[in-house]
Amino acid sequence: MRDSVLPEVKLGDELQLNIIELRKADRLQVCSESLQALITFFEHWQEEHIMANIDYEPVQQAMEKLKQLSADEETRHMAFVREKALRDEASLINDAVKRGEANILTLLLNQRFGELPSWVSQKLSNATSQQIERWSGNVLNADSLEQVFESH
Picture (tube, rainbow, N blue to C red):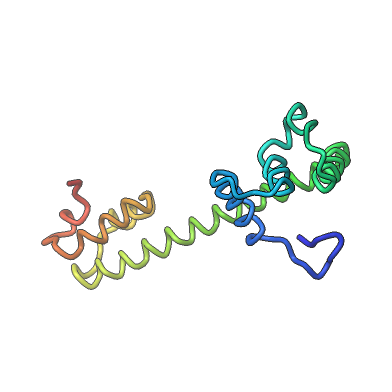
């Protein structure tokens, strides 16, 4: 995402982090009036009765822009598609991490116990990351495959 006034400025994860940190400034009460208006905007932009009391010009401009964007069906659709893509990306990353964890555990089990029966692959494919983590720790002290997968 790029700033409309300064297109060379890229808005992304860093901006999201700064927005999150605004709550800390608000809680510590170290905000100027304009910063307080921005915090209010980020937290209450959907609440017209609160936003009506904000007279800081950049916030008013942002509210006007939001009204324009929400009135445009194509823009709403694009926002929906972007949110879905972000969720899909997070899901793909989580799945890849889980597969990597399962692959490492499979390698450890092969080294410790030799060729693995098919039930181990089945168990790993249905496991959560937390289960894989627990089983990986069990590999160190288990005398058998069955002991690796026991619940404690």
